[in-house]
Length: 300
Image (cartoon, rainbow, N blue to C red; front, side):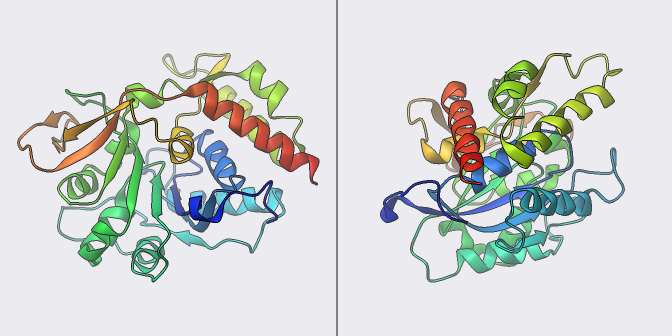
């Protein structure tokens, strides 16, 4: 893809996107945003599972959704789309092997000296598998994860629930980890009116992003707690925005916890620390996404 504008080459980073893209309606926005960001050299797009509650073929559904997004953007064949694990880990020792995990290992162990980031918009299964396959990747990448409950207690979170064992593997590893927990990623609120005005007019991909969210909003209308009716949470988008600006005054270095089966945090050590965000710049992230969609549409 032709870049929307030039970014100084020393500032560019390698990126792998791991997404449960067909889980609901927000992953699609983050994936498109990442693809349109010139600072990112996208090395792979991995379809992730999201349990069996919504689909018996969730990983394959995610792969197909990523391929659809690329097709709508006229980018089919430009990026590797890989299958992630088709299920959660059964314990903390045995990885679920996948193309996606192998891609992470391969890119981490390459000779490319540019920084490598892997963003996880769902369960973190493929990172745990990659680490168990080759622990040497730990000092060769940074992982950014949308998931986990609010600190310090923890608590229910969809992405965490879909693989608690994997989260414990990663928390217990030396992998540099940026965690955006539920109370922070839920700040990415946007109105449906705003999306209709700013996203839908942006060509085929803009229409799809808007319509699939509208359809999901309608499909889940009878759920008493979510959605709310006229708004949505683009909860995966912080993973993209924080790679453009990491908001150094909006996170704390916390001792990595252990996650109990009920998703609460067990604080048991002080040596292994992870970056835990307590705030995100919603305006910056949304406006950057809107501008890139408009620029991309103007180039079509």
